[in-house]
Length: 286
Ligand SMILES: Nc1ncnc2c1ncn2[C@@H]1O[C@H](COP(=O)(O)OP(=O)(O)OP(=O)(O)O)[C@@H](O)[C@H]1O
Ligand SMILES: [Mg+2]
Image (cartoon, rainbow, N blue to C red; front, side, top):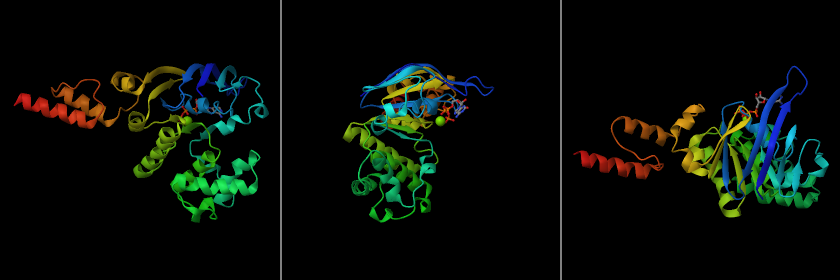
């Protein structure tokens, strides 16, 4: 199930003094079963874009196609309700959307909304909780008593319980400590590798983009500026400079070494390979 957008444009508050062209003719084909990163400076339209993928926002013009769902200006939610089961959207700071008295009720809310019986929805909640690294004991607790990272896990469980084929994650690790962020990324990568889910990741973290993603799309002022494989993207530090993005540590290290007289090929993106090359060049020098 690939995602296609055609000349997707979104204007907030049209015809008012607050009118804002947030997306300006986005045409993309996001591959099925892969992990695609969406990056770009703050305000470039990333969150606006991903909210079109399960019709939280509808286009001002242009369209979105996902499987046999076609979203265009005027599309009504009732016509595409099932799409929200197929595309699980995890918002920036999803923990703010928890609202039920217990974690069990919060996770069961989605399936119940799609017509699953109370009993079955509770069973599903129980099943999904360990996937996000929390055990049964949490089910009867209030989601408001948890730490920020735990709340986020519960919010993500509330999406996974619907078994979406596509996971759209809007900065899912923002504000987590490094270990929490890594655990979260491992969870998403497992869902991609073991269950074949298509993952779309909005991120400001270039280490995550380099380590986990297959493709990268760069947004700039509501337009697509670059579309590339991750391997190709990180061979062009000048692209990152142009868009004001701090490259991953290994790219910065390579630049420093080259400035000191080493000759590190552009396609080296792994630390082990870099160490080997530096050792060889030091030996030759001696
Ligand atoms: N609800 C809204 N009403 C009006 N303008 C909005 C609204 N949401 C976003 N915008 C504007 O649309 C543009 C794109 O915003 P968006 O949130 O999509 O950016 P982003 O790339 O996700 O940024 P960030 O990296 O900060 O999350 C910005 O100029 C923003 O101010
Ligand atoms: Mg955003």
